[in-house]
Length: 158
Image (cartoon, rainbow, N blue to C red; front, side, top):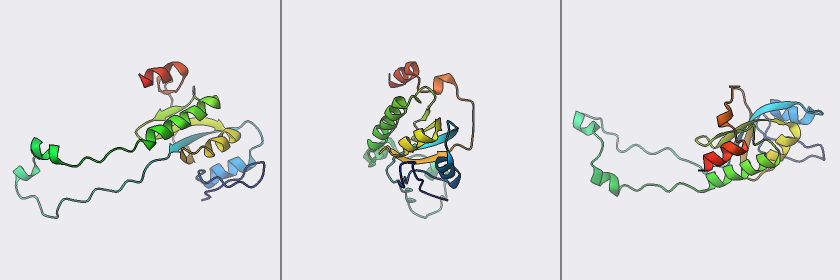
């Protein structure tokens, strides 16, 4: 699979493009053909939590959650603020490109799903908050309430 594509103005490497099929679409696209894509925002690296000891559970009491006092003493990692900032930056680019009414935002995955032309995909790939752009292989009906239209964008912020 190719991690790069080239723009019409010269050979510009865009590392955010994932997949040979999407790269080929960007190289060969001459008209207004569109593709459904998933735009992933930049996320901090995450590591899996280590297991707390390797001992086997031998009684039902050990399966109970810890006491409230023990839960208060636990260290809770802080959530990185870069994800919402990256999502907002991508949302602004989508709005500038006129795709905000068609985009479906998935905050849990830190991604948008939208139908875009090759030129729009190239511009999105050059956005600093974009980690990857992939073809959307699962096409689902998008409810109007899930899009980023001007009325739903304001209601999601509230």
